[in-house]
Length: 233
Ligand SMILES: NC(=O)C1=CN([C@@H]2O[C@H](COP(=O)(O)OP(=O)(O)OC[C@H]3O[C@@H](n4cnc5c(N)ncnc54)[C@H](O)[C@@H]3O)[C@@H](O)[C@H]2O)C=CC1
Ligand SMILES: O=C(O)C1=N[C@H](C(=O)O)C[C@H](O)C1
Image (cartoon, rainbow, N blue to C red; front, side, top):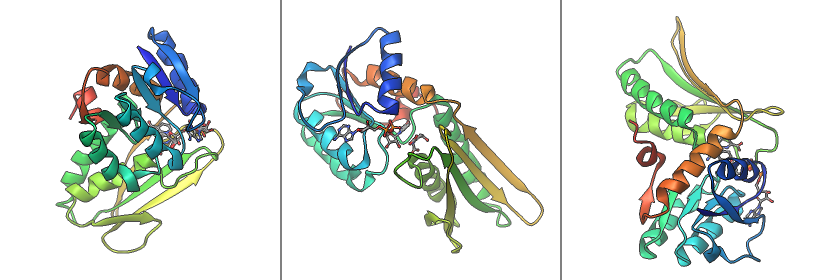
């Protein structure tokens, strides 16, 4: 498979290594909006920056190139991207987190929220920790976790960074050197705390998931999620 890497930073470089190990060829690697012919690629993988992702993605739709995006912090335009994908008969997967471990963690989070919805004595909170170069906060993964709790738990209607408000899930975002990505969901009562946590040991899990998603998407049209790719949940 000929792959275009839209964004050749920390993730782009990790994806390149894994894609080559799996027998693919990188035909484009760019940190720019222009200066390449996207039709050279069978599939594009966008891990760029929040203000570039939407442009990169719709360019792929316009040229009939299936696209995977893991860029976070651009979701105000997500609905528009989905609609454009359908209009152009494109192929698209966005995931706030491509690792198998986090996608299993997403399912655990959903089940736990469903169970805790019936128990009023526990209050939920989220914590995410990432490296200091991260541009967005809270992380895309923390937002996915919070939205899933909101859809399963009757007491929560919103999330916010460090909120104290009733019905709002507080998210704490910490930035420390060299942390690939840690997410914890805690339920606290007067007597105890239940915590589930996922800790990424490196970027390789995210990169492998993105390459597997690209392999899965290459002959399809439509908008999909990692749940479709991994067949879990
Ligand atoms: N969904 C997931 O599983 C994961 C998502 N991410 C997200 O992926 C994104 C990238 O992460 P990193 O590689 O760690 O960041 P990074 O900062 O190392 O790399 C981003 C690259 O995008 C480049 N760039 C800037 N403008 C561009 C444009 N117009 N077109 C293409 N590239 C452009 C930058 O020059 C930089 O090299 C972030 O939004 C991050 O949150 C990161 C890890 C996993
Ligand atoms: O920026 C990162 O590094 C990561 N970003 C994603 C997010 O915002 O959730 C996924 C992962 O946690 C690493």
